[in-house]
Image (cartoon, rainbow, N blue to C red; front, side, top):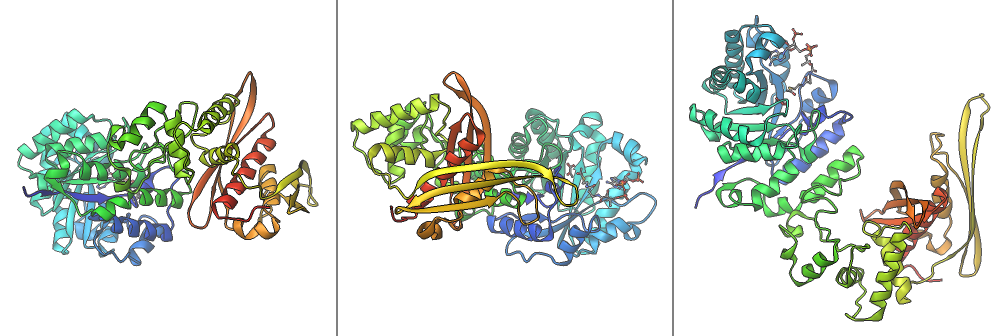
Length: 541
Ligand SMILES: CC(=O)SCCNC(=O)CCNC(=O)[C@H](O)C(C)(C)COP(=O)(O)OP(=O)(O)OC[C@H]1O[C@@H](n2cnc3c(N)ncnc32)[C@H](O)[C@@H]1OP(=O)(O)O
Ligand SMILES: CC(=O)C(=O)O
């Protein structure tokens, strides 16, 4: 059976940039465009040339794309001037991209209230703007803003706007759920009605927002009805609650029926397998911690915590997995926790290179220890590195790299020489390596003179002088630090989880628990270092 082509359109660099708190640099934009092109996206919307200096610079130094078509975004011309004389439209056209997408009104209320023009004037503005683009030799698209709300208020008018664009030469007309309030059944019904009005599905796109958490569902509803271009963003960035998440849509469209056997995109198997990396790179650019529960690509997307699940998973992974994690570049995790049985444990140990026979009494001891420590406030389902250290300790195979003699942290608030109030912490760590005593002192001020706090001072002192072990930890950095007050038995205790990373991109999590936040942090920091030394084969003391 021949499959119909479905086009993927990315607006991370335009609508994604409308996310509160997101401001891409020129370098970020180039990096994101390269990720999208590698993934197999058909259209990359780069931003609005003329709207701000970064977007203008980005179009001046346009990315060199291997596969995708590069687009500029803008709005239809203002009423009262010709398309050729509208300076905002000129800014967009002058970006000289092969394709241009123009947003225009399609809801009568917006035409009369937001634009303050007549319904006919708006239709003429759409047609003139699109003809102008086509005359300039561009592939033209019309984003029909507020289309679904407009259709519900005045279907004939909303549809007339689409036809005006199509007849003026638009390659695509795109139905936008701008306010994000439309639900999947309505999107399906209205998209069908649009196609029945004479707009072919292979000229029709869908652009949804996630205000009812239905952006992905709404996109699929439009595809079910016949739309053949889908717009979205990496990790669902976008105005307010975001846009349809391409990172979820792509595997669904490639792996799930009826899409997999009836539609084809330009995303290859390798592109699909790069999805987890693409999503994490996006978070990295935004300096965000990746969402563990993200479908397909999150660290928990294929984590099997419950004992019953883990036991069946070992017999056949398809018992509790809807797709193979490897096909989206993700990995299966069988975490340890108080929900685990011996199957989770053996799988986790095996992942750490520790083969323990079924029925070995050590398994029961480790399980009991995990459950006791979780009752005391620890958590091992995320802190897998701490779990591995605990299991090795119980199996008698944890090397001792160094021993801590003592540590001390002081926190001070005082006036500096200019009379300003400053805070400052100082940490001292004393440890022994091969019988040799080492003392390290560190402060909490960074290069700019800002106080990074007592845990930072402690982390620096601990990692400052490990003598012969120093080369093994020099590329380590602390990437996330989470603190939670939790119950340890009957008392409230502080639990600290630290995520560390090294130059190879490897990430690991460790946990510490104590009534004292600094002490809990010290335990987690210590284990982070021990795990790194262990994994990189550092010599035992
Ligand atoms: C649904 C979406 O997300 S569309 C994407 C929206 N993105 C952005 O707005 C980000 C980039 N925008 C900008 O930098 C600025 O808004 C600019 C440069 C485009 C325009 O700036 P300004 O000229 O100062 O106008 P301002 O932003 O105050 O208002 C928008 C103007 O465009 C008009 N307008 C809005 N939509 C359209 C349209 N589709 N066609 C023609 N004119 C429109 C409005 O009526 C308003 O005009 P008015 O001031 O005469 O009432
Ligand atoms: C065009 C667009 O971003 C919207 O209507 O939501």
